[in-house]
Amino acid sequence: MAELGTSFAEALAAKDYDRIRELMHAEIDFRGLTPNRSWEARGPDAVVSEILTQWIEESDRIEQLLSVETEMVADRERVGYRLMIDNDDGRFVVEQQAYLGERDGKIGWMRVVCSGFRPLTEPTR
Picture (tube, rainbow, N blue to C red):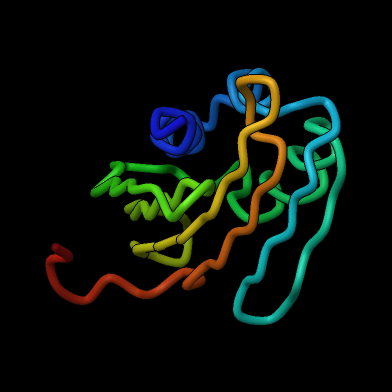
């Protein structure tokens, strides 16, 4: 299962929403927390259209997937990833920590906590 988290992070960094839909189970239970809001959706299309494209807008250019870390926490996969994003407001780093549950070889359950867009003032490592 450890490859599901990495695949998700890579697809998000590429803004490859078709690939994200492929990775998600048809009945995915998704919840996310950003600095100012909590989010919920069921089903891959809802996760993409109601959440992920709101978090990372069309005008946001993802310059780099800076890091990906994965490990198992009992029956859940934890994946942490960091993105460098550029948009009309400047350069930002965004970090997300996600916990995944597998169902039929796909992501069936997912919880994500996001740092929000943090202004990039010095190199991030």
